[in-house]
Length: 85
Image 1 (cartoon, helix red, strand yellow):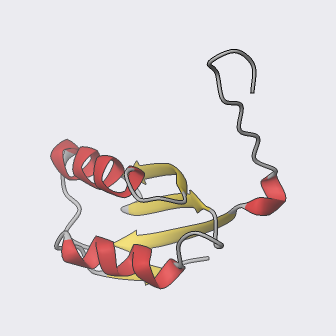
Image 2 (cartoon, rainbow, N blue to C red):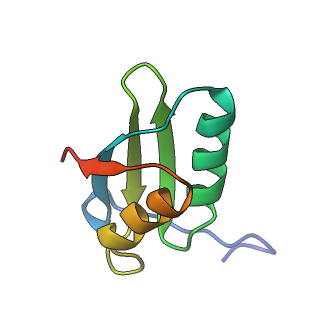
């Protein structure tokens, strides 16, 4: 900690990546909704929704959140999911 700034470092090995194929994903509003909503979950470090490929890539800390929870969250937003990786 320096002054009033807290420094957090994440090692790449601390993160997992899931790529979900997402149904019901049609426009920029869905993209923003998915990225904003999932980005607020503790342990999620990065969310990238791709309209053309209809995928959502999520980098997260498996010690804080499970992949199944991410899929359930996408489903709760009205999107069917399949894990690609």
